[in-house]
Length: 213
Image (tube, rainbow, N blue to C red; front, side, top):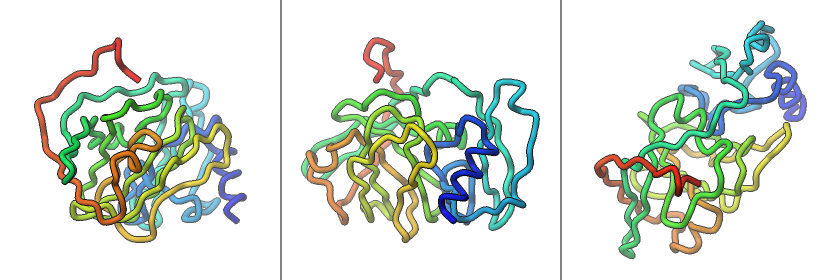
């Protein structure tokens, strides 16, 4: 059935321009749409494809889905560095913060590899089951699932996925945030399940065009 669901996504969503991050079934705002949680009756054909849009499927309740247009071929997003993540070792990472639904939908899609010392932080309003995938990302990532300030699960060196169907990643337990790092960064920094992450706001800094990944 999982393969069938993936093929249905491909059929109804054209080029497969779905969000990089999916929310769990409690509050689907663009980041955790599990392939195993929808049925054919949740979907309907539309004319969005004529306008250059593909369709992202978004669950807004336990069983209610809406189709959200995502423009095919849109440029990757580069968010300001608005926070930092500090570890007990003294190492700190500069973070782009994806805290709006649109930002969370785009995530790291179509972005080059993150440099060392940088990451993207996905905070959510409450803990829930989160699912992320790698469709249309260009470089492997480490995904750290966080709840109450501690890492509860790590998906290390998650590979890119160029063609549907794509696997989704995430723990069975609830998380309230996800930190994405370049592949191998979690191991380099000694981050493990149970590691405490201290997230601190900092004055917003735009990423210069010349050093954008």
